[in-house]
Length: 216
Image (cartoon, rainbow, N blue to C red; front, side, top):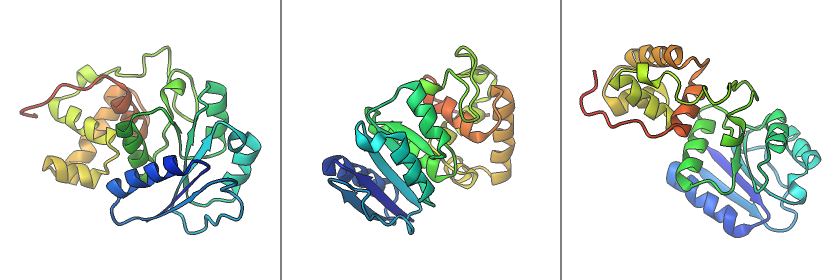
């Protein structure tokens, strides 16, 4: 996997590079940081682009729209701005994720895993409104239906929150892929969500689920 990290702040971009190397040790990571980082940058080989838009000129919607249109890989956008209107505009451009720069490292890693596996990541600020296919209603979306899950399903939900694929979940929990698929379908039905990405967001945003010693 080729990862390209772009931004005006070298220290922040190098920090993201450290996170990527920890998550994906075999990834080829390139950092383009400094004044005017978009000038002449080649994104053609990048499977994943981490773009630090900061809060200044790079975060202008016109600039972001032009960048997205010229980039084939998945884009995770980091920003100091996080108003609902701005986040919605950015997500409407087609980026794979919007990550506020004040998020914890653990949440950043979970968000990047979700994006890498094909999901879309949106921050808390949009989880109470309808945006980009993630429909909420007055906070009832988060955690609703978790009490219906079996201990094993709670474990599977925890792994979904980490961005794991069915194959990875099967390996971690020591069960078959077919069993994982059955659990995922049951989880979606119990939580009232439409896909595993929405379920993963619930896992990331809800309070920690209780530890399960002997799953059913």
